[in-house]
Length: 480
Image 1 (cartoon, rainbow, N blue to C red):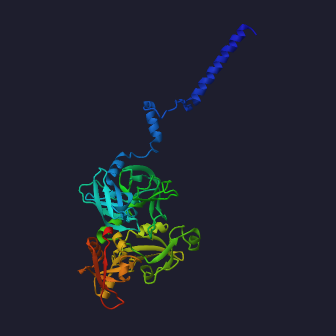
Image 2 (image 1 turned 30 degrees about the vertical axis):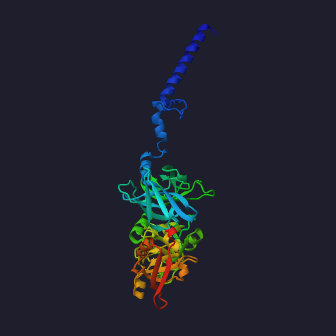
Image 3 (image 1 turned 90 degrees about the vertical axis):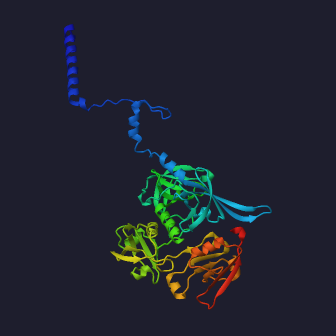
């Protein structure tokens, strides 16, 4: 081949290549993306190049928690450190005491403090330390062992405090802060998410409660009674318990919902004890087998496994085997959600119950009652000062007052070997007078008992026995 032929072939090849390139870019050029290789980002560096800031923010903004600084600051100022002292004996030169440490939350500017009942359950003396290090002696306003809530009071004004907010607004996955004093370390904040709602736990002896907020925010001994707040610093719950095989945190923490805690506080302040409405029936969860047998649309609700005679439930026609699925617009999924809903109401409140029977949905109005099957507000008291002398008391209900034609309080129980038991007093005794002072309710009885010194004389009667009975005992002043 001649030189001329080589030249011609070369020129033709170049023309062909250029033509293909032009055609390629014309057809596909707009679809080609240039990928810029980025150097790895070092998270340990103090400063990140401006080039990557926006990109990092867009990638991680959805995953990052809210700014907790303001929420933590607000909560820490309102959470107190509690030292609860119990006199357990005396030595030659001093009293021997046992100390329980815990936390509390200031809920009013004038010194109302909510805490866990088990923190102060046996306390003879309660010391409060505020976030600013000021110390106060607290008095117990009221207790509710069932919900593990106690209300304390200190004499102070213009205190920082948290207000209860609607715990129903919490969703699983929401960020929360737990603020307390674990192991006596004051003003400790931990963060986590809501792991579950309406959780039923069997840690502290509960009755008809079973509706806790579960979180993975760290709680440890001393955290009990502290605040569970949302990312805005609003009080969503009172830290109560952990589920652990060691006694320390293992990932499962529980708080009493604020809606429940608020009702307990309001009832204690208004009535001296919590007023819980009852329908008068036993319940159990609905499972797949029950749902199929009862022709239910879903595996939800609570099955009535018993209905008490002459109860609120029986009077509206509820029967064993009925399945309650809704109460006054609130869906009832299981036992915890049933108790969470029903415990918002008091005796005498009217609710709307929706239930299934024979595959058909029915609705009835029901008026709740108390443990005595009446609509009265009854104060049943088990305060420590009562336990110290060995009794439990309650108010007389309206039917009893009308029947016995008297005012006073009822002795519910007398502990074996206690101070009062030595007087031979029996349960059912109706106390009319305390050291010759007439009493009409449990709160009056407790006030007199707390201020009493040395000898106490209780006068009253039994419904089933004729005559008046005086019972006298000497108080253990070391326990007061």
